[in-house]
Image (cartoon, rainbow, N blue to C red; front, side, top):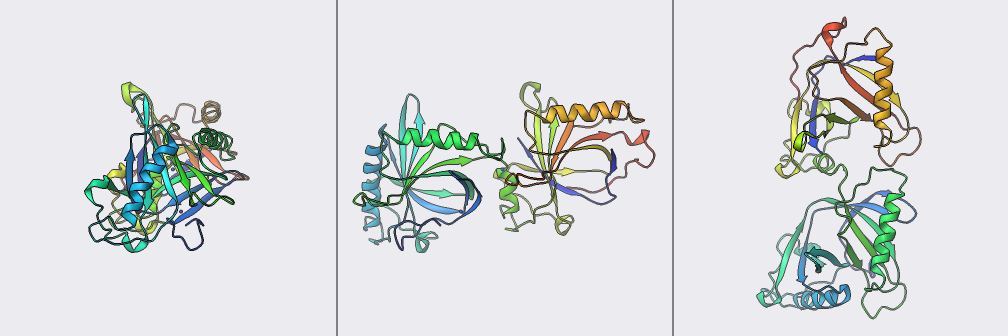
Length: 357
């Protein structure tokens, strides 16, 4: 039950609370990696990319798409400062933007690879803007036929239902359940075999995942380590509420000089000294519905042991949950509850000062 942290120099990164599709033949699309797939939806990680965007203050999805695409198509056909004709790409992406009691839309066109670095500027009268996307994840559900005002709400509901019933439990967190995008991959005259998708942004684990994928000042990819540690910090949130600290152990290669995260990720260095912890293992997914019970079981076990009064009064955390598996592994999962132990009360657990990050 008692475990001593090794006398090393662990470095961690902490976060205060974790993708090209086939369009028409030969049509370029933004590149992505599928990180999770189920029968009716998938999670994609899209790379950084640049889009051209048209805002349309129109409540109708169909009308907004037609008006926005008309402006974008003029840009593609040469209504830009270089009079350059661009290759058509897919999809055309129409995103909902809730505004007060109405809804506006952004209609977007993915710029082809040769224009990603230095795209031609649109003529001012088109009222178009560049839209630079960072690396991000989206939940995607495909559907066929034409995307219309009459069917897109149901498609969004179906995606929300699929995510809620996901085999990953609560590990997929959507950025905004009221915001979504409809991706259309076919021309309007294409009547059969049409492909559309609903996209919704995924928030879970986003900052740390982007960091290890290269969102740091060194542009370094960082190998994944185990476990991912989520600690409950009492009174660390707004109005003295509890907060969650998600921590990632940096590999040995980066312990001496870790890559500095990009400021917008809101990641912070976290120094660990050598210390002891009590550990209790449990299986399955760690969820809101079971982690408190698992922590209580550890507390009961401690109360019946020689270390009944040895929990550390100086710890910043009530307890921590260590997860050793990807959220996309369903069988043989390993989790642990950790609680800090007062080293002065247990032989061999005295603290040494160690440099950590």
